[in-house]
Image (tube, rainbow over all chains, first blue to last red; front, top):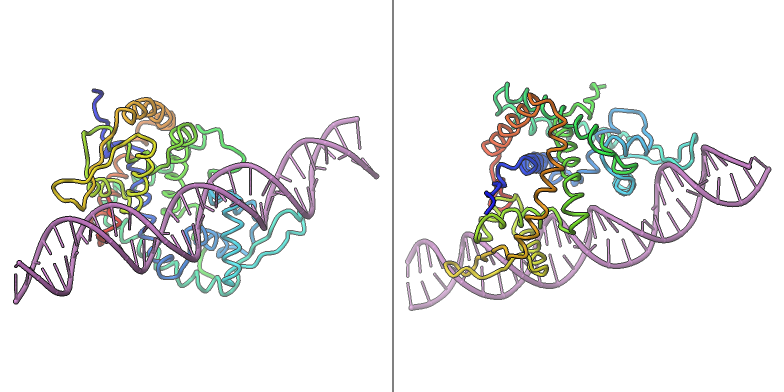
Length: 156
Length: 156
DNA sequence: CCAGATTGGTTGCAAATGCAATGATTCTGG
DNA sequence: CCAGAATCATTGCATTTGCAACCAATCTGG
């Protein structure tokens, strides 16, 4: 019998596990405590720091396809956190902007998320942390250059 | 206004993006071509290399909660890839095992997944790859030691 | 030995998701 | 300038998911 390629040591598995676990920790703050989904949080994150952003750009920068963007934005709008308008330059596109309510909420949540994240990262020896940053950047680049990159399903 | 913590540079974001993109590439082979979900694939992966495994251990090693394990196992059983039995030692537990059909399918899929994965990894400079391995291991350890670890939602 | 607490698995239901189809707007070639 | 192709967003529908309730088996203290 072919030797058991231990799942524990299988790279893709470790990556997925780490990312899921990390994500879950963060979701505990913006999700469990503020009722935002991961997609909503990402959109809010992007929109909070800018006056406005087009739906297309939004999708490209979140690895979310257009349906996900559309629906997450719809929910954020219902909650009064962002506004949605038709872009005058190209009326197929939507122009999203963070409302003051949204910015306020974001300003309230972000520090807590950062705290949670750095609680974990500070538990790592600095060299390991640097290695992770470096390796992650290289991985992102490798995926980008290796994979065909379909029109939807953007990468980053 | 507080400086815009660029999402692109935000560590949790990079981790999530990379993991999602990587996972999607792999899912293209076991998912799109063989109709397995991520959870089914993981269970099959674990079970293929061992005679049998209890539901509890299965859950602990997959970051899947009991509902996910139960449902994924149910689907795998319907497909004839694994068998499910009540554990005689503790009749609350289930004892899963990979059928020969399941092992054959796994043997067919695994090389393809490995190829896809190494296509990406080989595109990385070896030092970066090593850094990623190292950083990832440290991250997993940091999460494990930092986070409370609820009874369900196991980590690894 | 028994009643209540615990642990593990499944199920029901509401919400979320993926995918294909649709509608609206813009672009292209002739 | 116009007809067909292309691009975006949205919607409908079937499937999946998450959460809580539930059932079954085991454990605990008295």
